[in-house]
Length: 172
Image 1 (cartoon, helix red, strand yellow):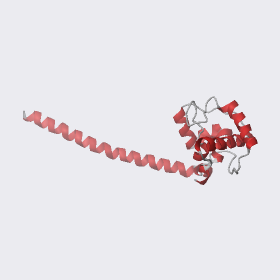
Image 2 (cartoon, helix red, strand yellow):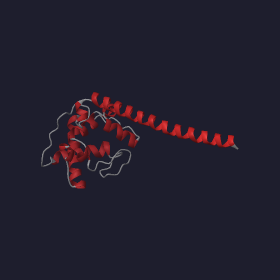
Image 3 (tube, rainbow, N blue to C red):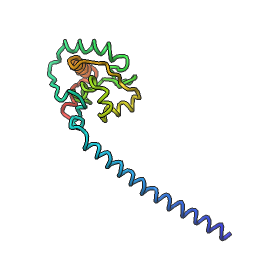
Image 4 (spheres, rainbow, N blue to C red):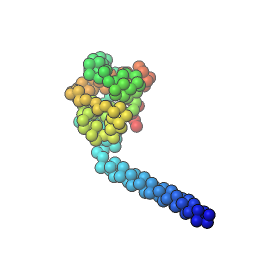
């Protein structure tokens, strides 16, 4: 009976010590992960840190009122190349919905994602997060820079219509 009591006490003590020791190990791993993330952020290009993505677009001027010609051309491109995977609401189909995109993303990021999708998915953490969520890689549609600007104008118009505001990301 004494040996059974001793064995039970020993097992309980061992479990307690093991459980406590594992927490310290978890804390060390969390700290190491945090340091790794900070080092990766230090190496990021300034354009990514500023929310502009990676690509040729470093400064995009937007104006009011919207350019209606560009909105129409942007919609035609969207209808032809984007609408199968993206909706103009917040509904995700294959890719995320576009409602409010100009309020969440800077114009440079949007245009870089449209024209430089492969590099954005390889280097931009926001694009990588979207890929993880949607689980489908956006194909390169070979959209020219001038057409990307027209798509952006269409998105700005869509945000006014669907979200009641546009360009909120510019000031963030």
